[in-house]
Image 1 (cartoon, rainbow, N blue to C red):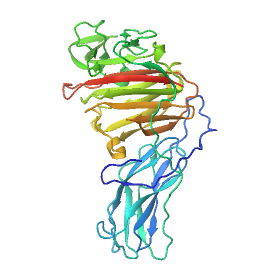
Image 2: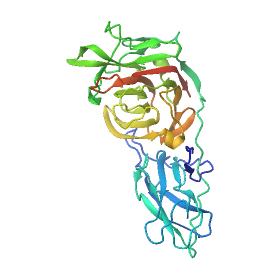
Image 3: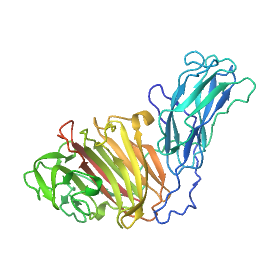
Image 4: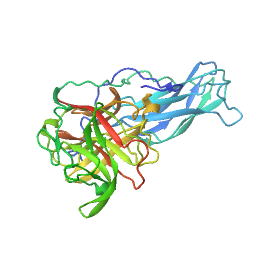
Length: 411
């Protein structure tokens, strides 16, 4: 687990290998185990102790990574403990990964506490990847009680991304091809169902300048990489009876067999747009049809809270025959959780490892999320796109995503 600046760390140590969901019936990718509920537990410590250990708990094994930010709060009654006097103010990021123990502890330094003095540890917001249980608990100096012990074993460290399959596809300027429909070695400039995503509320049309001459080039190679250019159109373009005022851009591998894998890894190196209303994404669809879907990254720029430099996301969608039965994932403030940021300022690596038991997401080679894999035996095709979802002037910041490289490894 990584933290930023003054954030403290929860206790974590070794690797666990047991799969808690080895016998779970995923019903061919239409069911997923329930999320765990995360709570903070009450704690006691000896008045002369140098540290208090406060438990953070899950109610059952988690099928996915859970991340919680916690912070100390001063006591409120006559026995209140005050930060800077009785204890040191502490802010921590707690990470549970699948198969981790259900309890870990946050270490709070004690300065000089008298018997009976108390403070609290609380969640700063709802945990990412879990339901919220008890959000705050009291930490008390108690000379006659057994101190809450530290949780010291069973937690695994974050994985480092590595490709352990055969390189199947690599994007280069010389080998990269696209066309309106795509073929075995060329990407399609539209989705498998067409050039619009009405169900998503998108206001942009996926453009191809060979079909719509006069638009700004939606795709072009520069010295930096392949530019995915979005735009507000000078004149609306009508598609399937709807007028579109914005241009989106997509490359879909649904006909590009050279990009399709079963178990293996995908990795993009890219710089993200910063324009409000843009919706960049790297995602995977089953070659047997939607759903299932694995979202490696989405930038929800149409949401006012989204920070392109600091937010990342990871999502899976289950179901079959065009009907979604579940959606599970998280939006992570990567700077707070992992000390990682600057996603519009430079190039970063977005990767996913699809294994028989788990799907694992990585940013710059470091694991940021993991989910049990409910999609046994599926084969995937990749999509990289920048959608537009706005009715604004669409002129702030950059609406371009630049992809420097893309590779796929088949296991």
